[in-house]
Every structure is written in structure tokens, then in C-alpha cells.
Length: 173
Image 1 (cartoon, rainbow, N blue to C red):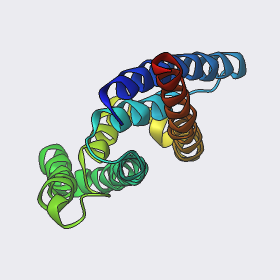
Image 2 (cartoon, rainbow, N blue to C red):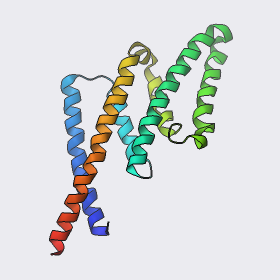
Image 3 (cartoon, rainbow, N blue to C red):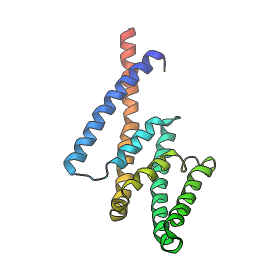
């Protein structure tokens, strides 16, 4: 894409994205969907990562899922180890294992062990009671919501690009 088409594409895509975010928020508000942060955190991560959009989509979805799974594993481990090892080591050992997986093993599996997983681990631990109480809802909301929401965002890129090319061609004619 040349510079004029790129600028126009970004304008059209951002406008489409704005409308899509408003529509999604309206649907979430009307339906009372809880834990919508699971959807929007993935979208923020998708547009802050570098690289091809399709690669980012896969990285965000897999990384977020792994982050939630590691959160559950950490919480179950903490619950099991705390009575045996005490509060300090019962907390620190599972945390060390989960962080080791995300940080040290990242170079070996960057699509699944990444900052997205770390972000989901961090945010999901803000309210561990809600996570434990509504675990299936967390996973369903993340998987269905983020794939649907981010999938539409990816699909919006094609018509935004076509509009940009058409409007620049029309302008130059």
C-alpha cells in the first residue's frame, strides 16, 4: 500500500473499529454479560502486538487461553500447598512455576507463552473468588467472545482496505 492508501485505510479501519466496539458494548450492556473484560483485554493486546494481524490473532487467543489455564493451575496449587507448606511457600512455589513457564519457556513457544498470557494471569487474579465461582463462564466468555470480537476486527480490515484504495483512486482520477 502506498502512503495515501495506508493513511486512508487507517482512517476507515479506525472508524469501523469504533462503530464495532460501540455495537459490541451495546450488546454486552443490554445482555448483562459479565466479565466482558476478557473480550476487550484480548482486543487491546491484539492491536498492541507487532507482526502480521493473523499471527497476532492466534498469539492473543492462545496466549490468553494459556494465561487463564495457568491461573487456574496456580490457584489450585496454592490451595493444595498452603495447608502443607504454609502461606508463604504455598503461594510462592506455584507462582514461581507459573512465571517460569511464561517467562523462561517463552522463547520455545512464543505463540502460547507470551505477554498476553501474563496479562490474563495478572488480571484474572484480581478477583480469584469470581474466577473460582464462575470458571466455566470465564472460559466461555474468553473463547467465544474474544474470537468473535477479534475475528470481526480482522474481517473489517478487508473492506477498509478496499474503501481506501477506491477513494484514493477516485481522488487521483
